[in-house]
Image (tube, rainbow over all chains, first blue to last red; front, side, top):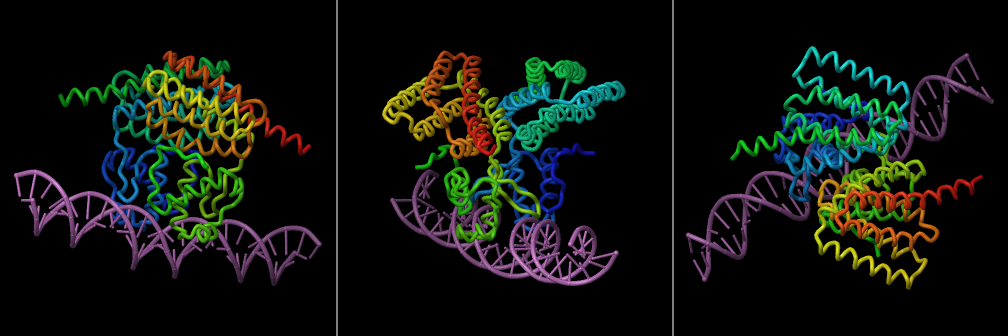
Length: 230
Length: 230
DNA sequence: TAGATTAATAGTGTCGACAATTGGGGTGTT
DNA sequence: AACACCCCAATTGTCGACACTATTAATCTA
């Protein structure tokens, strides 16, 4: 089952469907990163007209999954170490902000739900130690809820609708290695505590560090690939 | 003369032209904020087909100037005090980041150019005291150059291509009041000094404050409008 | 008369076809 | 053999028409 984002508009139109389908295929690597996109080909594949497909491509461009050039065409974004750094610098800054705002604006029951979610992770994690999938979805859920807790609609849109799919793409295709799972759990716990105490500054700082650690983890994969070539 | 952004793709296609034209009209208020957009009507007005106009609308949506709902239509964004706060929280965070990065990554000649720009502002400003136009364009230029100095392509795109037009829209339509001009100059100067000294932390902090001050200035206009109604 | 139901009417979503542009391959020239 | 030029195929940009949806106006019912 794929992780869906709850605050998205419901899928009513055909281009919505193509957008969601293509997004998943790009994030998961079925449509390979860096490859060129042929509009006539994909239109046939999804059984829609080119106009509909182009509508979907426009939206994919909005969340940084494809890049267009006028009169040339469209290609899937390429995952590079440089871009990872750039994106994570932005992510760190924005989610840090979200976390600080959440410390002020989250309702008590939201915080409670967040703690329950974390306990739930602890359960499943003990059972499925090493299996990263649940942690993957769980981590996203954790971040997702905090972002929602900021109550800043613009920020929520920016992170949940625009940026997150690209981040997921790095995580899914570059994978997570090592014993990051349990460490991430502790970090999550510390963040929740800071939020519960309405300590915005601390919450922001902890979230930024948490994200930096996550970045370093993915970075490792790039370093490995580079060494493998040499 | 309108302020154009230098890092934009050149206008080759018809939808490019419509996009740029509509963007200006929305930012300047010719197309009034909050109003509904009729695709057939505007298509006729710009002398293009609906497909071309829709392409432009998609891009306007990407920079937060219009909002679409499926099967309902499109309307120009409404300027509200709440949204101003939300947008400026994000802006402050991102430009703070950009400023911190610029302190590390700007070339000496870029810093030099920035200082010259500031001196130039001082000249024109003395002559045209009170007239906000030059300060308007100059301030944008100042921020623009620092953002470029971050050397983070993703961040640059986010700020210069996606967010800035909306910020301009607030500034143009809500105006700037009071003796903010000379104060802004001093703030700019302090920021440049921090960048020159490669003091990223200070530069970030000063930029955030500078932006907060700018926000408070625009906020005043909303408060005035609210009082005027009562 | 108030409310609900239904029909007309814009307006949006989608389609297939045409026009304009790009990139590549082949030809010719020096 | 290297380079420049030109032509052609493929792809993208644009158009007008059709299908479907939502909103409004009119009609009917209680």
